[in-house]
Length: 601
Image (cartoon, rainbow, N blue to C red; front, side, top):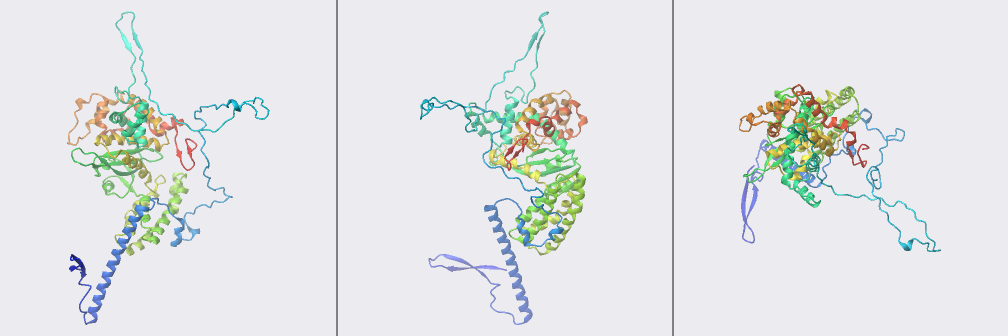
C-alpha cells in the first residue's frame, strides 16, 4: 500500500502535510463479480494486518505500563484458575493441603510487638535515683524505704574500634660462644609486610562485597569514627588479599566442576576504559554447584560479553548444565558431554509477562507450572529415589498434557506477541525441561543462579563500575568467598577472618610452589605469549599472575592427587560447608518473616 503526502495551506499561511491513501480510495469499482470479490478480499487482508499491528502496539503499550508502574513480583493468583478449565480437582496431580484444626497445619502466626534483645547481649545498668524531696512520705513525713525495680530496656550502639596489635618476638642468643642468635618467625599474612590484620581485611571485604558499601563511603565512615583509611589504601588491600584468596577460590571451582550439576547465569558490569571516553561492558558469570555435594557460589569475570568465559571454565566438565537458552551455551551442548537442563522459572516468566495481553492462555500455562511447583514443594525433603519416582509418576503426565495444549495453541497465536514468544520458547526448550525428571537430585529451575547475581546487581548500583579488568577479577574472587559463606549460613566476617589467618600458611607450603609454576606455564597472555617463569620465584609471584588468569589453576585443583595431603586437608577445611560444621557457633541465618536471627531461624 502506497501512502502519498499532499500539501495544504493553513490559516496562518504555513504549509502542512496530509496523508492520503490512494489505494483505499478508488475512483471507480470493477463491474464483474470476480473482481469485486478480489477487491473485498484485499480489503479484508489489509484490515487483518492492521488489527494484528494494532494488537501488537497495544500489547507493547501495556508492557511498558506494567514495567513502569506495576510491581515486579511473579506471584500466581489461584483465583485465576476460574478463567479456564483444567482437570477436575479430584484428578489433579497435586493439591494443596487444607489448613484444618484436625491436621494441625495452620500456619504459625507472625510475632507481634517489640522484638526482645538477645539474652546473650551485653547489658549496662544505669541507676536513676530519687530526688531528696521524693524520699519522704508526703502524708506522714516518714523516710521511705528504697528498693530498685527494672524500667525499660533500651538498645544501644557503640561505634567500631580499630586498635593496634604489637607483635613481640622471642629472641634467644648463646651465652657460650656469643655467636648464634635465634629469633621467632612471624606468621605469614595475607598481605606480605602489610599493616592490616586479618580482622580488618575481613571487615573491609564484608563491607564492600557483603554490604555493597563503596570504598569512598567507607572512607567517610572511618574518618567519622576517628581513623582514616583512604579508598586507595582499601583498594590496594583488597587487590593483595585476592592474590592469596585465589587458592581457595580455585579449590571451590574444582569441587564445583567435579559435581554432576552446575547452574550458570551472567550479568553485565561497567568497566572503565581510559582513553576511550566511556565505560565498556564486562561480564560476571556465576556458577552454582550441586547443593548436596558442593554448595558454593562462584563468580568469574570476563572482559567482554562474549561466550568464551563459560567455554573456558567448563572445559572438561561432564554433567548437567542448567541455564537459560542463551546461544553461548549451544556450542557446549553440541561439542562436549554436557547435558542441557532448562530453567522452568525462566519458561514460566514468559507466560507471566503475557498474562495481560492473553489472560486465558497465560493463566492456564501458569496453572500447569503451579501444579509442578507444588509437587516439588511436597518432595523437597524426600529421598532422591522417591523424588525421581514421583516425578515420573505425577509430573510427566502433567507435562504431556501441557505439551499437547501448547501444540494446539501454537498455530493460533499472533506472531511477535508476548504469548507467541512464550509458546515458542517453551516448545524450543521442551526436551531440556523434561530432563529434570531423569534424576532425583536435579532441580526444576535455575533460580539459585539468578539469586546469586543479585549481590552483583545491588553492588553495581553502589560502586558503579570496576576500575579495570584486574579489579573485575579481584571482585569476582572476593564476591565468591562472601556469597559462598552466605549460601552455607556462615557469618561472613568470622569466616573470612579465620580464612585470612590460615590461608597464608597454605600459600607458603613448600610443595605448592612447583604446582603454581606449572599452572603459570599454561597461562596464555592477551598477546598469545607465555609468562616468563624465571621471574616467578615465590608463591606470591605466581599468584599475581594466576589471579587474573585462574583457569589453569582451576584445572589443577580438580585433581587432589597433584597436591600434598596437608594442603588438601587445609583447603578442604576452609570450604564454607566444612568450616560451618567445625564452627557451629558462627551459624547465621536471617528469617525476616519470623524475625529470627541465628540458629533459631
